[in-house]
Image (cartoon, rainbow, N blue to C red; front, side, top):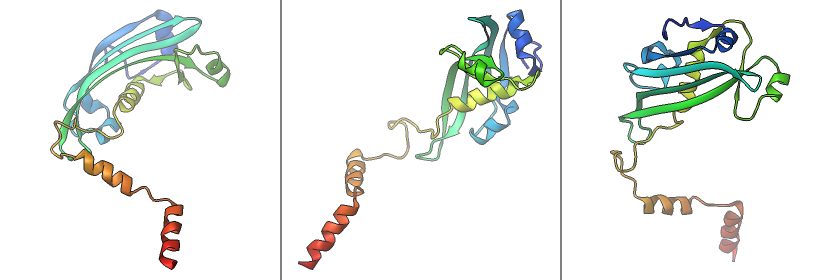
Length: 171
């Protein structure tokens, strides 16, 4: 996986040792990511730093890669760069979570060994947009903003406008 790091690790042990790991992971390794991206032939650059500060064991990391996704407007492939950073504080219960400083996002540790690849994949999935779209200038489907605004105005019907139309027809 990364610099001799196994897929499942004891995050607390790594944090106590203050370890850092960096490397590249093939996109095809991420099985759940395959349902969101069109091709998984690239690489994800991963940098992980484990440590302890403010009484919190943490994982600080960054992920960068480029994915091929489908534009939801024109349904054609598009390249989507992803560059995300995260800072997790390890927690085992609600009390630890409530004491977690604001800058840390909680990472629940339920077992000694944690699937680090799943943690990385979760962050990649969160970094992808819900609906990928080309920029308006690059998309093959051109949208006339005047038509969109006119359609939005005509779609604004309220129950009272329907009632008003009914009363006009009676007189």
